[in-house]
Length: 339
Picture 1 (cartoon, rainbow, N blue to C red):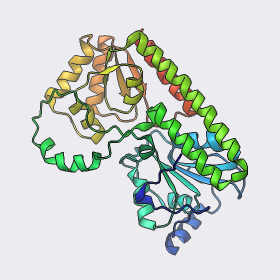
Picture 2: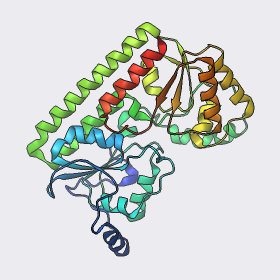
Picture 3: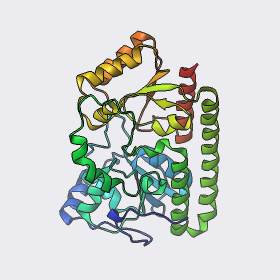
Picture 4: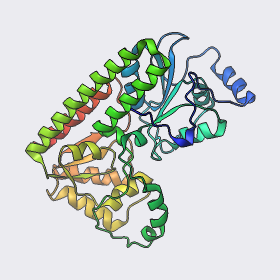
């Protein structure tokens, strides 16, 4: 496998990548850190000789720890469900963690741009694995198409019933195939950093992939029993999982896109979504519990009032879970909602 490195982050493959931080920032950070523990939890690791991995979220931190085991010290910058990766502002503490990293893992696709801004601001040659690029899910011409089509989208009518969800869905951690590719890339990179443990990293990635295969089998079973059944959604976070289960998104794209962008959907679109979850035309509402507002709460209340099952999804790994158990619980919740 070829490790894909986001061109925006640099191309160096040296053993220990370093970011050249301004002396004043390092000094201030050292004072802030003196005598206290880091604000970002370490998901595992040994002493000073451990490989240092920094992940943008605890989802990727958990996968990295699963592959690396005790050979690495893993820091997940975002680990609190109240933090929004779209709006997160990096701190000097984050800069220090990245400055000492051997490997950085990001989602990419515009989801965790704070990582790129942080690395761009301080330079350096950190090696970055980009989950979106590794996934192969993003069309090569996506960025160009977005630029060319921007004016066309602005001219569209407010009440758009087009359910062609053509915008790229960057939430690739809900794609089991994408996470298998990421795990392989992590194992390969770790093997270059610690050749003596390369076989262990490869074995761990293989075991993780077998767990993903089990999730895929579960999703295929749901598809066999419920393929084509429709659901509504507040935000497209779990779409890859739901599509793997053979289910159909019935939500007007304009609504879920507005929620994701932090804006209000037009009143007529909101009315349509409320009707959708109230009249029995969808099997359940997939609800992003981390991104809520008056409109999503109105849709949630309408679904509950109508007796429509609600399946909650999150963007971050819940406390006490690992990636595989988290996704298994998500699939179980979907299966229960379908009846």
